[in-house]
Length: 468
Image (cartoon, rainbow, N blue to C red; front, side):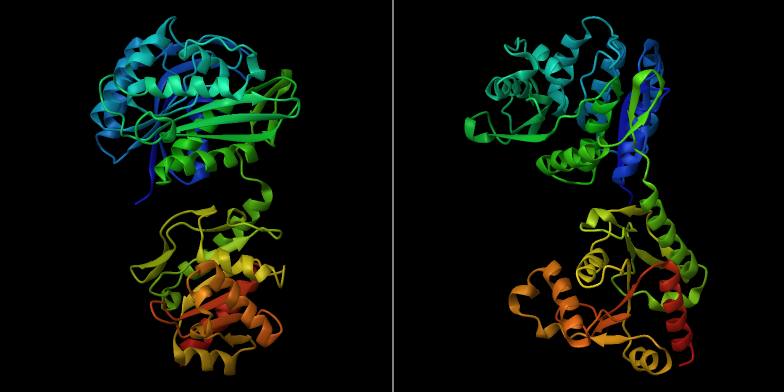
């Protein structure tokens, strides 16, 4: 089943913040976004005019989603008034949600987006229901009731004490704190050239040994004008990775990396307004379109279903300069067979493929022109037929010949497989196949430079085996 995630937030007409930014972030991370709107705002990237609360309709919105779908992870943003707060708290409690709160009460343009004094009720009623809290420095010091001595140049130890105070507020008084929770103070430390986020994760109890601190430091950018929606994107990224079942520390780490990448590119608006650019870059769109082209080619005919192995098929495509799995796209859930036709179980996204992605990364160390790979079903009769009746190059690799240390590490296996093929053949052939090993299905692996190249090879394979 597709991973679900919920955002409860205000609507932003620029789509750079609020519920629209959350939806776009969830989508980029690979989870399906459900959304419930707390308020309609009247704003642009530099000016906030006002808002209209939808708290009267909030309960119906939440029950329609949470009462129907298995949603467990929610990002909470704009809470306009106490009525909205009460509904949210009750829903988090009723549906046992894992909640991440971006405790924003003032917009990036400097205007209030909630009722005066609502912060104290949020702290009292919602904090104990949270999994993660993501305040900026000012919000953290406010909720900790602590005045920072040095402003944004604060000593990190001072902020650690604030994080400890906030963590304690996230537990109900008198209840032994067993559940793991975290506070992320955004832009906690700052120097002339860098800015850092401070993470505090509480394991079990409040002893010093059970509080884990970590900082994420990044270069400081000198930006003119207002950057709209950064807090929304960051907190929804954490929520999305939590929904994908990453532990708290890993979800925060991946959200930091996601945000850092996005913070390098902006949509420039008039009047010095800026939005984080969450669109997919053109080179990635090209890779996705080529994977679509290959998939569309095989999914229109039942004859290609014979090529799908028991572990199911994937098509992976990479950016020409790919060096990590995040730069390689694949089909979520792989390709299976439905009604006799090859059928994709999910969408095409970057960072989702595993086996075929590692194949491409290993192949690129020897031949940078290799950008695509597929895993096909092995049939001993096919190998000889393809070898004798096509111009495709085939190479057998015997898995049992792997050194014991390599057998224990799957990525090392892919590297070994490619390296052995190059060593024996002098290049990466069109096909590398093996007869399997203990616990490993026999597999045919097809390599290519682009979608056209892959389709030509698939056509040769299917045409040849059909003649058997």
